[in-house]
Amino acid sequence: MNSLFVLEMIGTAAFAISGAVAASRKNMDIFGFCVLALMPAVGGGTLRDLLLDRHPVFWVANPSYVIVALVAAVAVFLGVYKPGTRQRLLLWTDALGMALFASMGTEISLGFGTGALVAVMLGVATAVTGGIIRDIMCGEVPLVLTKEIYATAAFVAGLVYVAVAYGGGTRTIALITATAAGFAVRGLAITYNWTLPPPRVRR
Image (cartoon, rainbow, N blue to C red):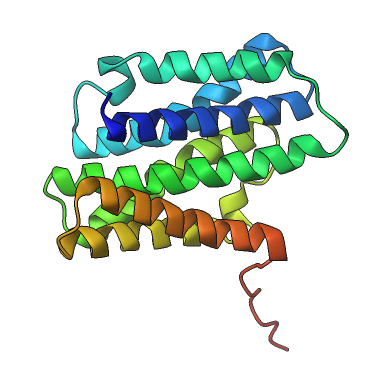
């Protein structure tokens, strides 16, 4: 099996789990689990493909993404959790999905002939759009709009992908390196409660 496809499935499952865990925190039914699992799993990639005029959209061309997301949703729905574990699970699976999708979104965009900056920005859009939809549907302020280091980590992943790819690295090496960089930045932020500085209050 293609290693890049495996990475895509891992990212899809990670993001789907984050959506399903969010549904669990809101005590939704199985339909809610499936809907919220699909939003981060396919939402950002759908926006990217539409902006690139890439047809058919990736999950229409290959339903494996939807199947993986739904399986993840059912698995989370049937799971049993200790108090306090769901928030940690959401944060860490979301971090992995974000890093993978930022890297893959950048890679796909470069393949369509965009410049480096546009590719990185589309990678960020791929990584954060689905999570924004998920959080809004849960009635919460999206992570990307808070002081959390989130979009910044996605941006780092995209930049690293471009640097490795332009430096002659293979697609697989670029994806793995970029994903590791984005996940490390987000993971450190979660572990040490790093946030972006708030604006200064002028008097």
